[in-house]
Length: 472
Image (tube, rainbow, N blue to C red; front, side):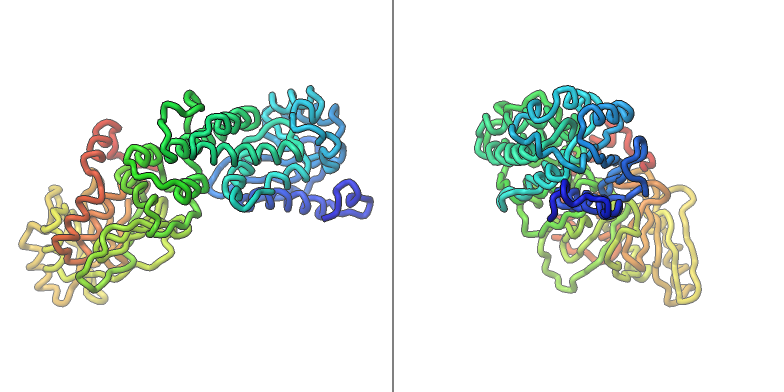
């Protein structure tokens, strides 16, 4: 790659310059998105805006032809507290003689950029964030993203490399109880990152510390705020930590939501993920669940959780169920057609003690709805079978059941259970309302539906948090 100082001349196009800088960001964090604005070297309008999938935050990138510190300080002042990134195209190569940030640039520029939450870094510094030994690749990708999302101050190439190395060493040190390495990684994160990214790194290192077998109260970063882990940090722990302790997995599952699975693929053979989900499942909520497979064999393979590109799936008994966090449109697989006869549907609902508020009977080109007016289950009513006998050849195509004090729709033609309007439900409610209606469960499978979720925990959370209203 040509040096920026020599490659930018009178014949260079603005688009080529912007693309070169964008490439350096991609090298550091392949997961980011970007858009160009059509402006170049403008005082108030950025050249590029970068953001991350599934996140609302973004950072504006201003390219600068000059690395003059006075000019940069002036620009930072004009865009105060915008979390901007300033990229002098000539880089900061003249200032890489020291690993000390305060000595790598004018102290006034460092002070101004930190005060305004602005990041000042050249293309070479950005690329330095992506350089890592193979064994440190994943932790370095996390530290690079943290700098791009929440870094502030002047970052020279030397400092970018030393920051990467310190965070990687801190993670390895946390696993084996090395207090000095762990403390140094935390110290640097406080100097460079905003509070949100510092909290995420602290949570990762503390999880590694406990997961490595150390006592939690000995963690050198006690007192730092924690934060739910980002997807790649969660994956790093799952691939690194082997720790059979319920308290550890309970801590890791604290405040875990579907957004923390975004883009992840985790095999059902990952034992750490099975332990994590045993702790997290009672707290997780989703918009919908869909049965995408039903094995004909009577043999059950137990309870297995997995992730496929962010879609959570559960193998329970003979059924495989996928979950959509926000919309049924997120499902990647089609559901099975499980439309049962009325007698089969009634038997299944009664055995599972499901409160069925409404059913739709279908017979080719005709349908008939039978609904409860008083909130009692229609499956406890002989009239539904009498209607089915008159409506010859009919099956149950759709139903509405009561769950968590709300209506939960069940489409038996696609084996999909979903919340209406903005409603979301506990994963447990979705599974226990859907699966018993799509198949005749044996005793082992019914037991698994009870055991896989800690229902007492859910009930306690409902009572304390007032859960039961519609959620966005």
